[in-house]
Length: 330
Image (cartoon, rainbow, N blue to C red; front, side, top):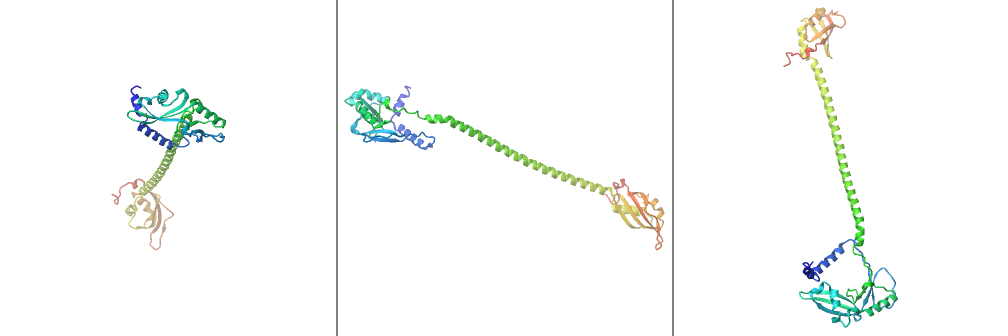
């Protein structure tokens, strides 16, 4: 503490201290009204009173005139700034014709220089102020502060001053509730953020499910298309090319035989025509590489116009012949 005492003496009454107080005043003006400590308004009553005073919620201020008090400007050493009131109390008999026990006084530092302090001393006889306060009480006035010509001081005796509520007491009482409200708000914000993340994830999952279902549908469609293509390919491969079949029939059938009709359907070949010796066609067809199980359909009828026999045959395509190479296939 001894090391900081020179700094404290320089601080008291300095321009920095005044600037600090002005800055704090500006900050208080920026605080919201519901959070700031609201001081009740002051109602000033000038002495002497002429009418009774009705009670109210305002702070009652008794304003005395200059000629009611003793006012003097004094200079004190810089060391007096630490205990200004006590120092002035010891020196009252030098500045006034009365002792400290006879006066109520206020000492206010006005300016600080490099060599001394300039202090305003305001004093009033105790008997006179007590009588003034008694007269005020008779008229219903119990002042909270006694000022002199707007100097901004308080000459009211300490025992009569109203008990001051500790600064920030209301704020201290409100802080737990405010902290609880902020904690609940933070939890609600966190839950809301978690819910938003879950909703986003749920929407993403649903979108991915829809995409997967679409992919499965496309895949199934491709499989169905591929199966149909394979089926058609197998059916196509199961049947020999028509040119190869005609070439085989040309080789197997005799030269005196021609065909009027040829049909190939689902592995079965039916054809009809005329031949000089139709009864021997079954034997000739057995030599065909691509046909088997040949048999007549109906009876053989002679054609009087051509002198040949009309026939109708049905045979089955050989399965292994479908994969066998032909002169027309590479």
